[in-house]
Image (cartoon, rainbow, N blue to C red; front, side, top):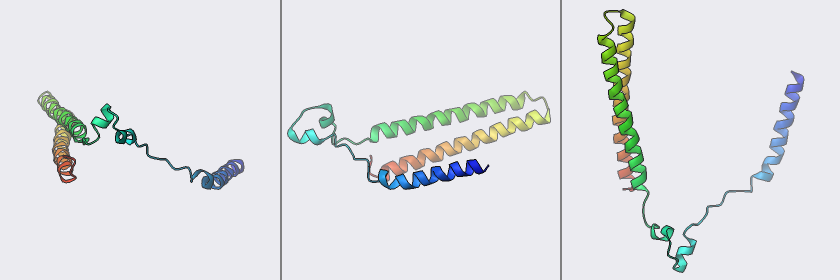
Length: 126
């Protein structure tokens, strides 16, 4: 146990002493539009003024539609399980929980859809 503490303390000391040497190495942003000022014609320069709204909005909306569809499918599965439970209390409870969680998931997907679209519109992305 003492050896482990000693190794851990040594490792912490080593990291603490070398951190100031590594800190000045900061990441620099790459200016991909630098050549556009010289009149270069490329796909990058042609899309310089475009916003990313189309891709982000389509991606988020597609994922939320998939989540909503899965929630509806799970509601159907829960209903089938409920009707097939034949009065067994444990199976009935499991089916009710499936329906409940699917409804909660569907509500969350609807709220997430509304919130994401609200943020996109308010932030000026669209």
